[in-house]
Image (cartoon, rainbow, N blue to C red; front, side, top):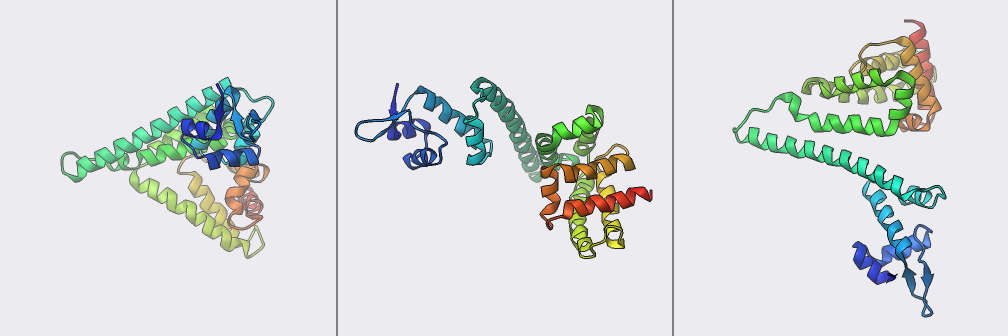
Length: 253
């Protein structure tokens, strides 16, 4: 079956303007154009649009999606399996948040008592899942499944007080790093305070502290662009500076 832009837009629930834009940027080309110049889409384009909308729902930008679906090695069946896993994880997160809201309503109305630990369960679960999605393979490859699983468990079992302290300390590391960068010296007092704050921050999720593991993580901050980007948002070169400061810090331990 073939579709015009308007019919395909109605079928997929998106605007004809969106489909025309997808054509312009090379994301979804029509199968052909009619003698009158109308875009005509076939089954292959319909299936491809479904994949595009799946990826959009998962939050990927159009340029990333284009690179994925236009890759000669792209497998629609494999992509569907991946979509399924990610959507199941997303559903689990939504279920946790819905349950959290329902328990809060019940507690507010005096119908039940909600433990402090429960109040942040959904948010902590999301943080663990985000970290797994972004850095899981690298971290597990470097430190092993057992250490990462224990770290995740420690995060999920945090009390409200500990969780709030963890979030505050994370921001404090970034603020102190910004101040330390002004010295230009990774061995300066400000830089070493940053490294110590970073160690304390890791302590909230690491089962045990190891200066070698601390240094190894700092090396990853420089070697992996995703890690570097997190600290370089403070200032370009911040990840490298933090790595150097941690190197001095761990050498003195």
